[in-house]
Each structure stands twice: as structure tokens, then as C-alpha cells.
Image (cartoon, rainbow, N blue to C red):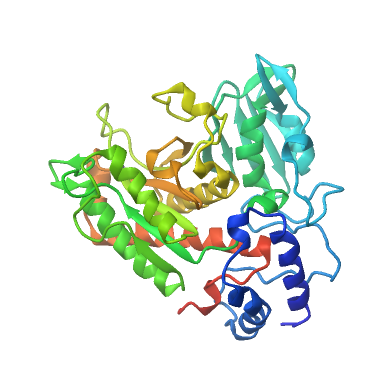
Length: 421
Ligand SMILES: [Zn+2]
């Protein structure tokens, strides 16, 4: 591997960090000073088939547009004309907006045009597919709040509406969900470096069993702890430092209003780079018909949650966790996609909600509902250590993919190159 990129990579890192969220700018000086050498070291020592991490881009010494990340759906060359590395992109100004039914909206045809995709009505006036040489990338459906991106189901705040010969999404949905997932490189200035410290939060505990399957005698709190401990091991093998919100059958407080923010505090006090809360789900109605995976991130300010909020004023609130909206979007999608494909579970959707455990985070965070305990067939799978290990492996893989995306965007070495095989 050539050593030429190293200095350029370091220069680009400085240019990028200069415009990024202050929290991610700092970091031990010694680590920053060592970065060029770390990059060189990993370039020289990484075994041929080890890293899922893409190699740093051989950048010229001069600033160049930020390269695309390896997230599904993203390819190089999508940086808008005129945008240079080192300038903060203004995504809101890059989309032509039309007011329809009282909301600022962007047409699916403009999304297609921007990303060089072809539009086709697969069902006239109802279902529109946006595709390229790789196949169908997006599917939008009239009056539906969810769309598909590379096969994964993603929820918007508001349904797509038909107007003229186009489907229209709200501006906030395009800026906060559609665009960062399809072209994270356009949003690189809002993204942190690859994570190193990860906080895992096994949901519930102590007096709160969480969801239950009484027939199989399964408590959510035991399953979340087991999966979290398995995931901790896998992440440590990949070079991450892992902090747990609990390692035994306990909780911080019997009041959820106190308990949940205290879990986020663990991440804030550890100066974590990523927070993941692990849960299992249940429904009362038709429990044997409902199964699969759901992933949640904090809803951005102004975007409706997937479930109605208890208090509508929450929609207008900017929470500390909203400082990481772009990273949250990327993290949630990457984890969700990996869970659905890794577990071969049904896709209940990647969703948004103003969850108390995510609201006060200083780092990107997500909450995963790995399976339905109320579904007997799925609960029987959860009851086996093999399936819980599969869940942990899918989550570890999702975190690695998220890391690799950030590392490629920021051209910093991710922890993966030193991982054991
Ligand atoms: Zn739960």
C-alpha cells in the first residue's frame, strides 16, 4: 500500500474537523498527533482480508470534495457541485422546496435527479421506484410513511403525497432521513470520527422485568443482559472499549423518569462515542402474527415520531441528542439493516421516537428491539443461546459497518485493522 496518502489524509482530517461539532474536534492531543503514524501503521500491518474498512482515499494535497462512504446506496461523485471540503454543507438549500398541504416538500423526482436515478411508476400514481444500474434503490408509496432504501424499511415523519405526476416528501424527512442515508458524504461535516468507546445498555432490570413470555418464562431484562454481555465480548475483540449501564439484575431507579436519563448519563460521563440500548418487544393484539426487528433513533426536531408523542410540544423541542441527528440516522439504518439480514427476521422498520433514554445523549445513539417475546415462535428462538449470539454478532457487525462508513468519510483509521480474526 502506498504511503503517499498519509500526509494528505491528515491534512484533510484537519480541514474537516475544523468545521465539525466541537465535541468531536477535541480528543487527546497525543492521539491526534499520532494519527498519521497510526494510519501508516495500519496501512502496513493490516492483513489482506481483515478489514471491512475501506482504505483511505489517495487524496491530493489540495482540498477535494469529500468522498462517498461505503454505506449501501452511496457512491463516489455525489458531492454537489461547488461544495468543497472544509465548508459546512447547507442541505436545506440544496433541495427545491414546494409548499403542498401546508408543509414544505421535496419531490421524489428531484431526489432522483440529484442522485442520478431513474424514476418509474411501478403502480401508476401510487408506487414510485428510483433505480440505477445496481437496481431499485428507493421505493416510495403514496400516503405511506415508510419507504424502502436498498430493501430496508425506513419510516418518515409524514406520508408521501401525490401531487401532479410526483410523490412529495416533507423537507425535514428528506434532509434528516433520506439524504443522510443515501449520500452521507454530503453530510460529512456533521459526522463524528469512528467510535472507540461504546456504552451498551441492557434494557430494564431489577424490579422491572420488561416484556415477558410467561409460557416460556422469559423476561426481557434477562435476555437484554445476556445479549449485551455477548456483544461486549465481540466489540472488545474488535478493539473497542465497552462500558455497560448494568452487568447484573439491577436498575438505577424504580422510576423510569429517573432510570432512563441515568442510563444516558453513563454514556455522557464515559465520553462515549456511541450508545446502544438493547430491548425485546411484545404486543397484546395478535401476538402470534407480529414478529421481527425494529430500530429506533431520536426523532429530529420538527419531524413527527413514528408513534404519536405523549406531548406534541416535544416535536418542536431540540434535545441534546438532536445534535447528533445525522450520525443517529446513519447508525440506526446500519444497525437495522444488519439485524434484519443477519437474523433473517421480518422488517418491522427503522423508526423515530423521542425516547427518554436517547434524549439527553451527547453521542450518537440507537435503541434496538431485537425480536418479539410475545410471538411464541420467535420467543423460542430468543430462548436459545445460539440465537442470542446471532443477535450480538449482527449488532457487532452493524457497529463495524457504521465505523467503517465514518472512517472512510473522515479518513481516519478505525479500530478494526487490529482486530483478531
Ligand atoms: Zn424494553
